Image (cartoon, rainbow, N blue to C red; front, side, top):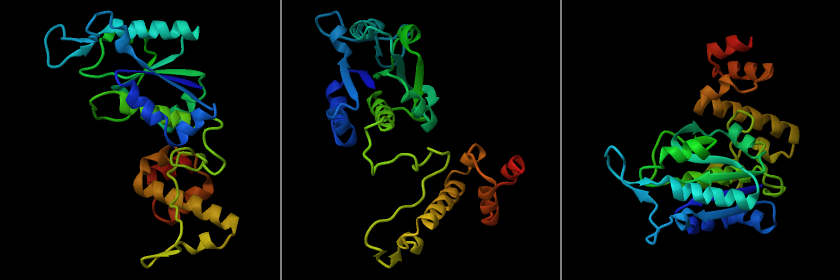
Length: 252
């Protein structure tokens, strides 16, 4: 996969995407990330890309033409029109399910806004979907764009090593991840659950699944409404008195 980031701060984005697991994946060719400075397409000697709002209002707005020119140039280089995303608090909240869908695409372009946002005409002309990380506002779109790029990248083949698996993580199967522990077995009087020290893989797997059910019921009970629960899962939750009557009725 190739991910292209359009931003006023390409050095910031490049620094983050060059580190750790994502940086390692890029170096071995499992992922391509390119950062583009759309200020280079300003078309004026001062490299200005923002202006005041028609109708008045506080702050400055990113102009349409520099972004459009950058997108046009990029698409000409690629020889195609990739799926174009805009990070915005007005977009649909990102979910792990949608991350998996985006990871199936060959190429993504992520536009990072700044100031008061972007001239709506360029969004209407180019953007396929707006994505939000939640109901809050940041100073720019770089941080959410990097979060999205990281979430998508780690789903790709060859990005995570053999001992870094996402299939048992929170939200992959509709549940939160089970608690995990490492050495020492006793830390300040707190012991690791004994089952994890037995080496009995079937019992460990069963315990972990049950802990995922418990954590989800305790921390994010609304996820149980759509999680693919089995009859055994429902019986376990009922036994633990953590299953709502509504969910029980739907699956009985």
